[in-house]
Amino acid sequence: MQYRKKPVVIEAFMYGIEPRPDWFNDKVTSNDIITYAGTDMRDSSEYYCEIKTLEGVMRGNCRDYIIKGVQGEIYPCKPDIFEMTYELASTLPQQEISDEEIEKAFIDASERLSEHKEGLIDGAKWYREQLKQKL
Image 1: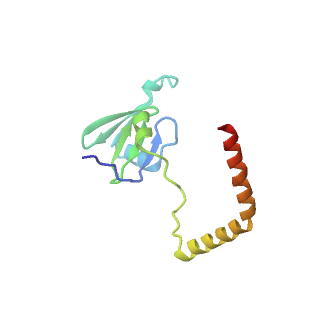
Image 2 (image 1 turned 120 degrees about the horizontal axis):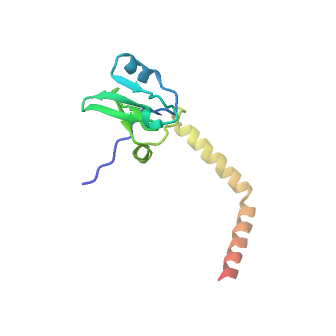
Image 3 (image 1 turned 60 degrees about the vertical axis):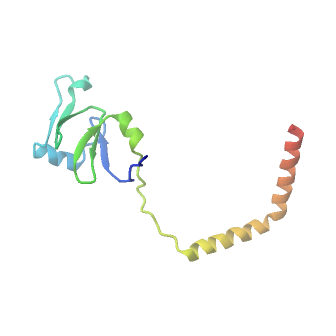
């Protein structure tokens, strides 16, 4: 059998690249996450964090995504895996469209289409002639 991952919305940021969100900083304060900066800021391999998870301590390197899951769990994810697994969620709330609004939009579109019917027919005839010439 095949399964599809349920669509869920998570929070994430790219460690060492994007600003650290409050939920990350709260875990640093409680020592659930320990950050390391190293001595050479040009060497990104020295910039990492260690995250305490139920599975043990996980290392998040510079440019890894740090994810806050649906149950508040925090864990790192490599960029290539992250990009294959997640996509940016819309920041706009989904709006419900009533049946009346759909019907009105359909009627409006139908009226506009009938106003341009002759032009559409002429365009279709022209396109058919172009196709005939290519054959």
